Image (cartoon, rainbow, N blue to C red):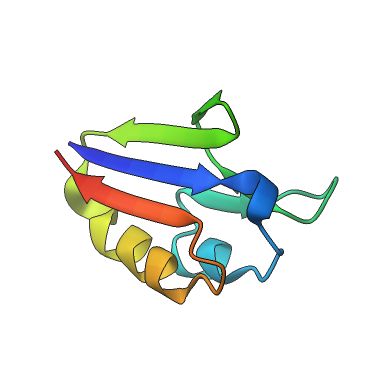
Length: 76
């Protein structure tokens, strides 16, 4: 299982995550910040538990490229 977490309120809208992992991230047209698709929000953290490992590499690249380091990708 992969656990992807996004701390959306700290997003600066650089778009790297949406470019590197478009299956999991989109940029909001409302405020220009990143959206973790199909995630649940709790206290400002958006989390997605994903059983499919095919997106792991793209999500890890997005987390590494994030200039404000608000994306975390963990394997459980």
